[in-house]
Length: 557
Image 1 (tube, rainbow, N blue to C red):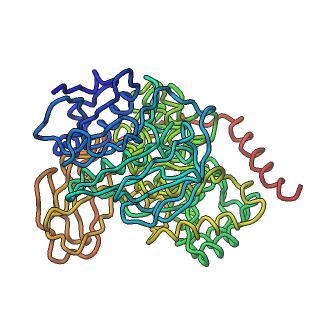
Image 2: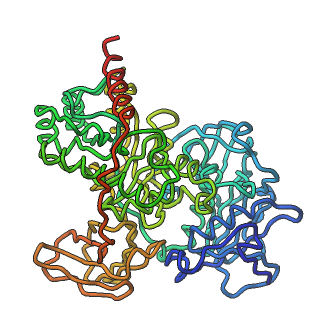
Image 3: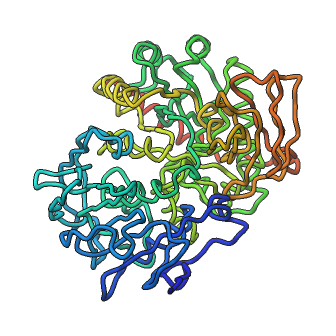
């Protein structure tokens, strides 16, 4: 038996303190049988070990703890189960080289309407990219097709004596040493990895935690409440469409713009809070203002000034602004993310690509893209995506990974009307019961859970959460998140019922508990005071006025 550590297998390893409880408490052993010769799949192996509750091993001998095996070989050999026919297996071909975006090919894929196909892909057809034109599988007796292209079957499963054996004609994704998961797990390319992730999830079974509920929100950067319209954004029209089609639109507004609020526009937002909301978009909206290499007091002053401006807007308008930071152009440093919770923000929302691009020297960026959200220095970072491109694939992949479906754009994306939002909302609503809401609601639904008898196990992915209680839940235990947020939480079922709970200590839920409880990370950060000398430069204010004028003029030009 040759056990290969992540470092020896081509990647680093997380420390025990930063590991998910899934990784520390539940490890499923999967044997990998690569074809003889060079194999450049070790980088992905290392990433998957850090993300999933599995340990991979190379082995030529029997292993008592073995639960499954991945056979990296020619699937046309029709080898089922290889050396261990009584354990769940996945057979897929060797990928001998790293494939760049320029060398991928596009194919049409049809998923079977079968319980072995994961939701929401079941019964759907889509177009996506793969590393190379896949050679169709030659089916053997008892196999059923899970996915196929015009050329034939791509993914199949058979079952013998209660054991499932999967086969895929799509090669194991090979990444360079400095590669990242999002290069093979994104809206344009994910098909090769899907059978692998689904296989591991099948092996994990009941020990796997469920993700957050299906959540969604449209988001537009820059609009303010100066007038009932902002460029091609007509707030009244959006509210009417959102109410009719059941969706929510959040506007990332710049705190610098809070100097004036149009009374009628604020009233419109108050009356349509189910469909319209505001969220914080930087502070002055200057170039990379949240990604600059500045000292901690400067970072704190900038964030606190943004909040003070939003508080003044709230006071004048009677609105609530979600305490989620939307960095301008997605530019935000790890140091600034660490500062956000200390200053009172509940979360940030940044695309995976932008988060990696502005923190390229940080090792955690290679693992971005799998979890419902990223936890960076104690700050939950929810992903978001553009309204353009292969949006339906993005939506399906986000729903599969339990990530919030946050689709963002600018006012010019609505130049042809609101049909783009109506159609996307119809597609999203077709996936099931969707929690549409502002960023506060989406952030507070950010947790993982599973039932253990009548014990509800919760992994918090934020500092403030609203937990939906399963009907059978009578007790609760809070597990450590991927970063230990706090050893103690405050649980409240009502204003008069507050329970202090330590991590890993099961507690009974109060008798009067309803369908939802609130969780708040106990303890407060050191009080921070805004540096009153922190003033925006005059050019920033003038630049913003010119930008707003340009956006508004585009409608009449």
